[in-house]
Amino acid sequence: MSIATAPILLPDVEIVELDNGFRALLVERGPLPVVASLLWYRIGARDEHSGETGVSHFLEHMMFKGTPQFPKGHIDLQTSKMGGSNNAFTDNDSTAYYFTMAADRWETALEIEASRMRGCLLDPHEFASEKNVVLEELAMGEDDPWRPLYQATESLLFQVHPYHHPVIGYKQDLERLTVQRMRAYYERHYGPNRAFLVVVGAIDKARTAARIRELFGPIPRAGDREEPLREPTPLGERRAVLRTPHSVTRLAFGFQTCRMGERDDYALDVLAHDLGNSKNSRLYRRLVLKEELVTDVSVINETRQEPGALFVMCELRPGADAARVEKLVREEIARQAEEGVAKKDFERIQAQIRASFLFQDEAVLDLAMKLARFEASTPDGYRTLATVLPTYDSLTQRELRDVAARYLDFGRAAVVWAVPAAKEASAAKPRRGKAKAEPKQKQKRNRKTGRAQKRGRRA
Image (tube, rainbow, N blue to C red; front, side):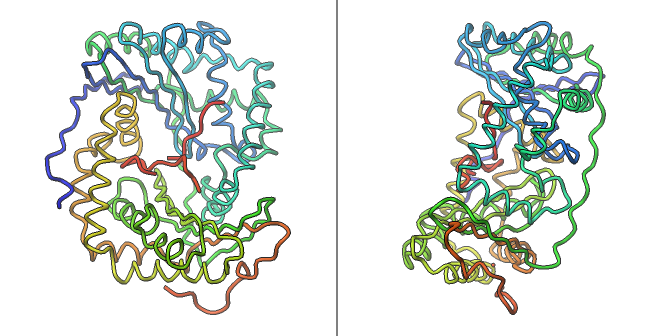
């Protein structure tokens, strides 16, 4: 069965471009009288300097705390009174704000976004109050048994690139962060040239374009984006052990990969699914069903605007032999590089990818998010959508084997054990000799297929 059984047609997108660098993508779509607007900033954790980690996410919170036109509480109040919804998220590369409203009142969202693009009040009292909220959010995340494991693995993989730092930041940086430093960050980064807008729904394109020019045209540009330091190629396997307050042992492998939209990225999606994203996957069949050593396994292809990573994560059964679990994970990854993906599994994965990718077109907000993710992260922007499924379809078994061998190299991997603090994990100690040729992050969604994106919700 071919994944591309019918041609993929792009939505009818009208582009609005302003002299200050602002860009908008407009998609008129019915029949429901609903509109989703999404303002996407090319600003994320990768833009933070040493000592200010977490400022992107913290600023996302503050963007709801008032502007001269919309005082404290009015953004959420206006949205609620009009029967709409709003939220935001911050990740490594981006910060985005979105509204869903009825078609006869949605333009208030444009007014709000234009007002806070350069007019966020950043009131010192609100800043101090919201800092406590962010610190509590950080503490809650530390209680999640998977987040510290994921972050430790990511930090081992990226030791130079800003991806080394968690999106929410370090507690020490957040505690010391001042409103003056946040304002400097805001003024340096937030501006029309660092953002674009996606509007999908029952809109009048001509009226919408005119309103965008009126609201966003006069806003001055911000600074241009700085290029981050490049991550050097790892010179060997990196290992770490976390002593945690949890009662279960967990294991994570991390591998540096490629940028979103590169051809290898599509192959890695298929490989990740074949390795551990369903009950039919290699690792699930071997470790959960056959050996009964683990209770849960997942594989995440986390591609980004800079080199991404592929993570393999599993939770061990009480009393399971940790050394054997690691050995079997290595064996299955090595086997995949040697054998590729079985034909019947490849066909099943293709069908699942196609269904998931097309399902994102059903709701206006999902379609807006899909357009924005590609517009922000791939060289051809949203137009890449027309080639996604044909690219998956064109992958060959030889190519899958080559990509697995190239990226899933244990000589450049990060291996992290999270063990109960009261226990010793002998398997977590460094292994001698040459290794054989090898969150739960439920909130992550693959940026192309919707299956697996790290999305922080505004508290």
